[in-house]
Image (cartoon, rainbow, N blue to C red; front, side):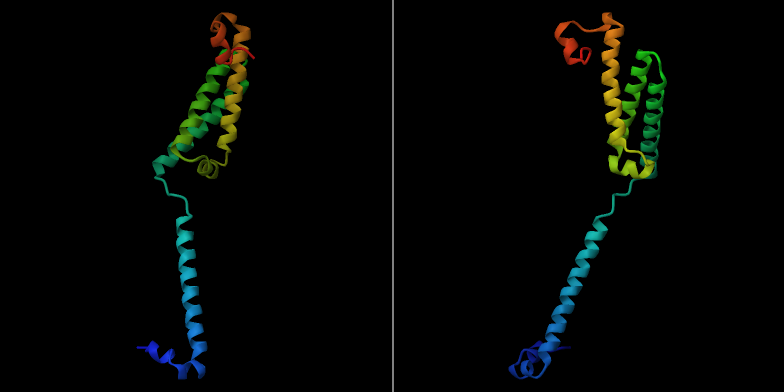
Length: 150
């Protein structure tokens, strides 16, 4: 066992053991920094999710993308609006299950961009539906708040 009293005695401080103390201090500092980096590295990993959660999120994203494609292909405004709304619901459900960043890594699709596209398309389709079928528009002030009017 090392007697630290010997290291700090005035005789040993002048005889070269000061360099030994400095080496020990640097070693302790390096060890503390190394342990700190390891703990941060371990905490930085994303939380593991169960296979069922990942599969469900993947299914919702795939359905949202499918509905997005169907909405683009529909010539009927009402059917396109229905498909867009379903796609938006699936995309939001996937985002509620897993963060968008993790979904981007799993499915290689930008979920936030898909949601923005679907929301914009939905707003445009609601306006178009109001033009195509004026009888479905709400009266006066409600038409403004429900995107039926531009």
